[in-house]
Image (cartoon, rainbow, N blue to C red; front, side):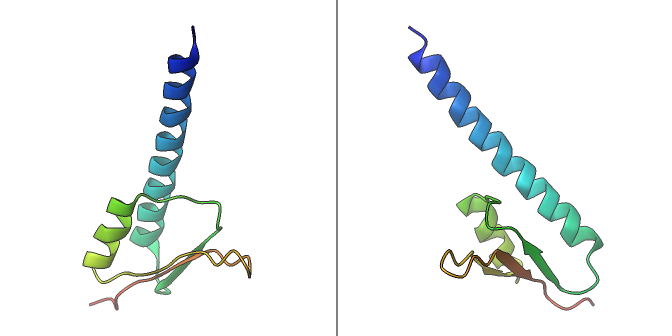
Length: 79
């Protein structure tokens, strides 16, 4: 009886968590001065978001589960 509602709630929860991670990264990019941003491997980003970052010359290194490395984002030089 509640199966569809629960499935929808879980999908919405995942979607909202990914969007929150993306907003947090955008904020970090805004205020970064080092050019390298690192995030824990548990953070999630949509393929569309990663593609947009790469289109703007941001190098994206995905987490390496074997070494427990997180995400690394290398920003283009400041102009």
